[in-house]
Length: 447
Image (cartoon, rainbow, N blue to C red; front, side, top):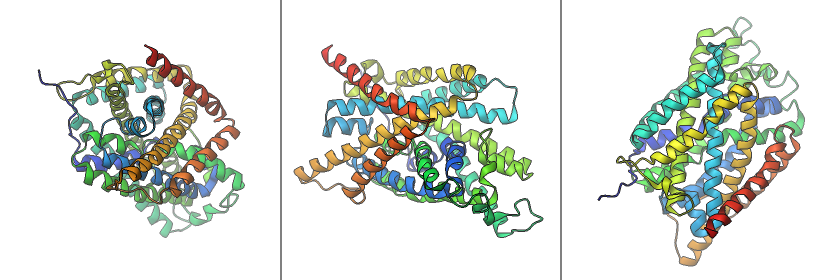
């Protein structure tokens, strides 16, 4: 009997667009409303500061992924270079993180559909998206890659188009045009830092939610063709994407529209062009942000199933999750992960207006744990390489300074979250979550 194996079905163009797509999602298209409310026009600086730290962390993961391109990614590295429990924690926390991301994205889908169909129950949109994307992921990894390629292409093309269109209006400033104030919007509504340094610092926490998922490029290593070349190329382009898609986009939006008029009833992208009378453009952008949410949910189901597969291979999850279809797809991991996200439909039925913000705060906490584990694992990995006389093929930046700077930044995010009323519950839950994983780990060791 021939054993089914994971297939290296993700081509270079898939990887490049997946890297692009995971850098741009609901965190930018809708989650940025929370960041704008705190930072005002300085939101672009918030994304720049957060983006630099995230790029350091992604380079660390990239260094390990190129050296050992395996499925399960940093859970495998944490187990190998740090210890069994760190690997166990890394894998299960990442799986939990993406379950939450999945539910947040599904909640965003319901918000975007509500722009066109205000009477449509939010849980209906959630359920429809869930079923379609689950079926796609059950086919083949190349099917996932192809769908993700085109959905990522749509949102990236739309953002570039929006930046170009916005830049045109900025350059053509006139009292007769829909955006007469332009650059004045950066300071006439309370200044560039309308909520002071405190507001700017507080905005760094929701910024982290926006960047959540950018590390997915490391998860794809086990199914990437020629990972020695494709992974470094994809990772090195992350910094340009951050500068263009986050910093550039926010500069354009905050220049065109008063920051204090951005509400939470829709994506700020849609609100701004609708408010200026561009109904058709607003409809197109709403389709784009809907595509973006579906795209990230697609990636979440993909990464969840691969993480469960990696955990099962390392005996940190039931062997049930190690089963592959004839086409090399971890079907049980997909079905279980997708099934749990059905909770999003229930939550959207019970709490249709609050569920996204609740999800965002808990996701941010899980992201902090996940990225801190990547950094600490990288420190262990480097010590192993030095002891073994190994020179990594693809090096991270400014080791070890960037590692310690990243850890300090993440610790600062926890302090910020503890201060913020909306995010404090996530900080309280985090140690309880880690403790629950510890007990799960110990019970598994005894069995």
